[in-house]
Amino acid sequence: MASIVGLLLAAGHGRRFGGDKLLQPLADGTPVAVAAARALKAACADSIAVLRPEQDALAALLEAEGLRVVRCAAARSGMGYSLAAGVAASRDARGWLVALADMPCIRVATLQAVAELIGGGAALAAPSYAGRRGHPVGFAARWRDALLALEGDEGARAILEQSRFLLHVLETDDPGVLQDVDSPADLAALRLPGGGG
Image (cartoon, rainbow, N blue to C red; front, top):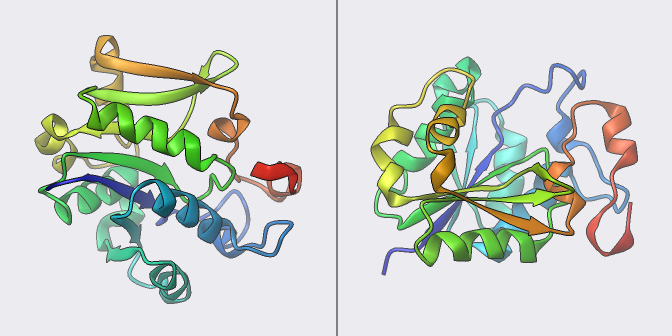
């Protein structure tokens, strides 16, 4: 039976960070993207990482974690292309749980809860912390064509804005849904699940 597929978007350049932030170690030594991948894989047994063609080191790490790697040549032109590539590689999915590789602190339970909402019939789902919507975002299969048509750097923002009334927002006590790594200061300030960091 088709399942909810995890999509880890890992093709960003990290320009604001000043280098490849996804390979930077967290406090426990785990690379940022590997921590995000492990959590996603724990929530979605079938998970795909979307990378730029030249990201060989990261591809090897993520394949070792059990993720399928899809290389997207157009990824450098924006997140929309990465998301479309991940959906194209899993057309039979019942839905997608879209996570960002620079957000390593989201709890597995949060990822699972969003995936379960999509599996249970929600059209769109996302967690919220302290009144702010965060990541990951879940999309039901009904959005397949719209996701395949994405381009540019807006990702799926237009879908979410145009269909706000369909979005199931899950209130959580998980600050990780808002914590991304855009700068070395962000990395230093992360609080890992379980009290590390």
